[in-house]
Amino acid sequence: MSKVRGSLSATMTMSSQSNGSQTMCAGERISYQRLIEMELSALELAVQAVAEVPNEVLARTLSLVLGAGGKRLRPALVLLASHGNAHANLERRIALATAAELLHTATLVHDDVIDLAASRRGSQTVNHVLGNTLAVLTGDYLFGKSGELVASLGSPPIMSVFSWAVMELVKGELLRPHLSDDLATTEREYVAKIRGKTAVLLAMACETGSMLDANDDHARAAMHAYGMSLGMAFQIIDDVLDFTATEAELGKPVGNDLRQGTVTLPSILFMRQHPADPIIRRVLNGGASEADTERAVEAVRRSGAIEGSRECAAQYVAEAIGHLSTMPQTPARRSLEALAQFVVIRHD
Image (cartoon, rainbow, N blue to C red):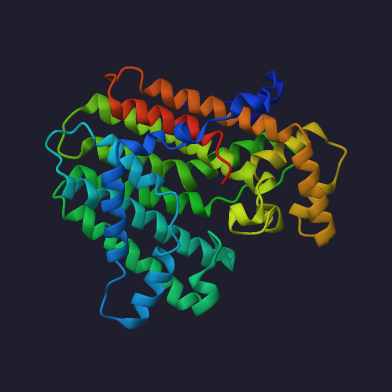
């Protein structure tokens, strides 16, 4: 990112907005998808076709992973970012979008192994059903397939950005924000973590989409910055939903981050707001019962930490939209703006 935001907890000083101001009708909710509806249908076929391999075991694991669906956010960003590129035909745009989705899916498969996750998106994980070995190999295959698709485009600069994203993802995964008495340090570590965990992939999708069969350095820089800011907002809202959504919406237990000892922004803001309350620290340190965990989730849910986290995400969204301000007023730009606005009001 061109700049690192200061203390995230500063958002707690902002005036709270009512929940009523964060509503959106169904038509607006999906407005960013309308422009690329045909492309998204073609993308879905391309993604599912990846599971059509002669090896029965691999075909089974790929079907399990790719059949779970998902938001398809990263390929949507590729498609929107490349929408105005006159020389980028549909086949090449779908290839790049599919590569972005496969890379993202590969990281999820490996994350599930690392986290010993039993479910994702409401379905059982490969590692839970078939074991870690097959899960790791499936993730490796998806990494390889995504790289093959990018290589087929014949663009070393796009391959370079793609490779950068993979390296940043690994570095981000190695970061483990620790619970410190100095919450400012914990916040900085959290920012670095979500940058590598989420934001770099969105930046890669936006940047490479703008680069496909085009040569506009200004658009490339703007889309990279947009994707970074959008990714930060997206992950913060994900962390909020871990407290506020239902298990059916999440596809995993509510409060899963707390159970795994993962420090996120809502927890940080709660501890700053309630320094004498030990419940979050006790749960994060692994010394709490299930009842304590449930009480901790409810305490955060009822606190100002949720609104503070949403306000921080809204700042990142405003920043993302600002990066588009010098670009022409096109349907793609308006769709990207709508997508960014959707991030802060989504419920799953």
